[in-house]
Every structure is written in structure tokens, then in C-alpha cells.
Length: 280
Length: 259
Ligand SMILES: Nc1ncnc2c1ncn2[C@@H]1O[C@H](COP(=O)(O)OP(=O)(O)O)[C@@H](O)[C@H]1O
Ligand SMILES: [Mg+2]
Image (cartoon, rainbow over all chains, first blue to last red):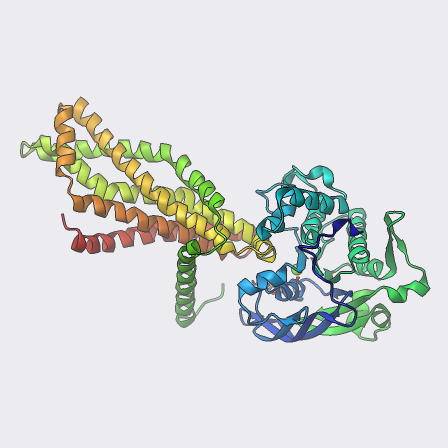
């Protein structure tokens, strides 16, 4: 795993128990409609929190708030212990260096090649020379098994490949936190599985904290029950006694409010009729 | 369709003007703050400038020729067709060159800026850019505004010159004026004030085209349909602004640099 490390840009992941992202009573309104209404949750260091909810529930909005791309109307958001509400965009840039985001439709820059897309952040930071950048870009692309696409443009790639390039772009700086917005949306089941496998690999290789938005419960179960076996280079179902060590939790949003926040087991046993229907 | 109350409508307009002003201001102040994206400025200048030269030259020549025909036919009544060059020059340099260039660039590049930034907005590329530590105002807006200003300025000069050449071609071939006479009456009679007025306008127009295009692009909502809408609005708004500003600017410039 250590192949991707570089001291200049590596963010120290928060230790267990420390908070990676915390929302406190966050409310945001678009055009007089509260999209998130009093949302509170905590993402602990090293934890993966799966955010479930129907379309329009405010999942993407929550991720953009965590990155500081949107500002809440009220409430507080903490990232790696630092409050981000109310600090100017310039200061957010340095914090965002420790975060990676995979957007729903990948959001690759379509005028840039795959290499330039993945290298984008490294070029902006100006603290690596060209050779070092090239090396890190190749490592990140090797991680998602797309090293051969270096000189291609995003529109020459399939949807699944674009998602993988977006993952490479998000993790090239080895961020402490990765945010995934519906990484399997619009993909066929086989491709979806390869994407989830990458997420599991990323989680187990780098021990990042992450928020993962999805509307596919199946993806969530796989994340909660599988671990990555580096020797076989694939994910395997964890034996039941080992599952307790997989740090995955669930958050269910409904009409802008958190209606569930807990473990997979608690979710499976929830008596809430809406949740029962959702996970059926 | 939902009806908006006049109060809300006014509020929206005020908000839009406020947002646009902030963006316009930052597009200038960013020039003095790092990082600066010179590569992007050059690339934008290339897209806006070079591609527009043929159409600007063509319309310049054609309008200059028509101007010569029209003015000559009026001047004939007074027996002073020799003044044709002078009148073509004044109209071209103070008014037609700047306006023609600005409207053409608004249609060709203002729309291009709005649709490019609009599609980046709706595909979350602008958000991705911010997430990756880049200020889109610096990376996208400033280069487009700067190159619009610079390019409209130079394209206006090209348009003016082509207009004069068009006027000369007609004077020479159809009006029987001699070449020397035409050019002498042109540059001897153009005053400093007229030239200054004619060169301040394109700077202002270029600024309007760049900022309005970026404003509509960055505020695009609602998928690909929204991109189409933003494009149209950018062209319509900047064209109207150019025409309105032209009048008041002419008035103002006449105070400082009278003929
Ligand atoms: N910038 C915005 N302006 C206006 N409304 C928005 C904006 N962003 C999101 N919304 C609205 O907020 C709601 C939640 O959006 P989103 O967070 O994207 O939902 P999800 O990702 O859960 O499908 C939607 O109804 C959407 O229309
Ligand atoms: Mg979404």
C-alpha cells in the first residue's frame, strides 16, 4: 500500500475516536425550501459512513457542505477538528487538500487528458516537480487499474472508467477524508461491483474516513461485509467474527432530516416503517 | 407558471447586479493576486481573437464600402465628395467599428463563454475545481475578462482599418476619388478626441462581454436546457448593455475629449 505515500502532501489521518467530520444542527435552504433541516452527525476517524436516501433527500448537499462548497444557513460543521462554517474560501483551500471528492457524474475536466485531470491538484499545489507529479499520477491510476488511459480524454472513456479516474484524482494527494457521491449511479451491476471493490481497497489500504452516498443498499452491505485482500488483489467477504472491525455506519436522510444513524445491525433491526421499506 | 411579485422580481434583479458587480470587481483584483493563470489568458485570447479576425475584417470592409457610397451620394449635393474619406473615418472610428466589433464578439464569444462555463457548472466541474483547490474566479473568469478586453480592443482597430480600406476601394473604383486624396482627408481630419473615444469604448465593451458571459455561465441552473438559456441570455444582455452604454459613454467621453 505504501506505494502512494509522499511526505509533502500526505495528510495524517485522524486517529480512532477523533472526529473527521461533524455536523451540528445544520440547516440549509434553497429557494425557501429547507433541503437539510437540523442535521447532526459525526464521522469518526477511519470510519465509513454510508448516507442513504431517495433522490432529492439532500445527500449531495451534505457532501458539498462538508467540503465548504456550500455554506449552511445555520449550524456548525467541523472538519478534522476545525470549524469550517464562516471561514473564507482561501483558508478552505488548504483544508480541502486533506479531502478528496468523487462527484456523481465524475466531473472530470473534459478539456484535459486523464493525466492532467489526475495531476490537477498536484499542479495547483506547486510543491512537486514534474517527474514526481508524473510518478504520483501513475501510481494513482495504477491503483484504479487505468494506467493505460493516461493520454485519453474523458469522453473517450466509459462511465465506469470515468468514475475510476475520478477516484484516482480524488486520492492522488492521499487525503485523510474521501467523499463519494453516488459512485455507482447509472452503472451496470458488474461495473458497480468493481467500483465498490475499489472503495473497499481504498478504505483498507489507506484507512481513510469517508462519507459514501448511495441509493443502492446492496453497495452498502458489500462495504460493510467485505475486506480487501491485497495478496489476492480482490475483496473477500469477511468472516462473521471479523466484521466487527469493519468500521461502517449508516445514516438515512429523509426530507432533509436524519431518521437513522447507526450500525448495519441496528439498521437491519430498525422498526421504522420507512426504513423497513427502504431496506426491503 | 409561477408568478413572481414585483417586489421579488426587483429583489432578484438587485441581487443579480450585486453578484455581477462582485464578480466584475474580483476579475480585476485577481490580476494582482497569485496564482495568476497566464496560460489560460493566452489560450482565451487565441480563441476570442484569432477566430474573430475574418468575420470582423469582412464586415469592416463591407460596411466601410457602404458608408462611402452613402456619404458620397449625400456629399454630391454639395459638391464635396472629396470629404468622403473623412466622414467614413469618423463614423468608423468613433461609432461603427467599436459597436460592430462588440456586437459580433458578444454573439460569437460571449455566447461561447456562457455555454462553456455553463456546461462546466451543470456537470459539477466548477465544484470539482473548487474542491481541488482552485478559485474558479481566478482560473476561469479573470482570463476570459482580460482577453475579452484586450481582444475587443485590437479587433476594433482591425475593424476600423478594414472599414477605411473598404471606403477607399469604393472611392477609388466607383467614386473616382484619387487614393492620395482619400487617405489624406482621412488621417488629417481625424482628431485626437475621436481616436480616444473610439478606443475607450472597446475596452468597456470587452469588459461587459467577458463579465456578462461569465456571470450567466457560472449561474447556470437546470442541466443542458439551462446551458442553452444562459447562452441566449448572455448574448441578449451584453448586446443591450453595449448599446445602452455606448450612448452614455459617448456623452461622457465628449465631455473629456471633445472633437
Ligand atoms: N444550488 C441549488 N439551488 C437550488 N436548489 C438546489 C440546489 N442544490 C440542490 N437543490 C435542491 O435540493 C434538493 C436536494 O438536492 P441534492 O442534495 O442534490 O439531493 P440528492 O443528492 O439527495 O439527490 C433537491 O430538491 C434539489 O433540487
Ligand atoms: Mg445527488
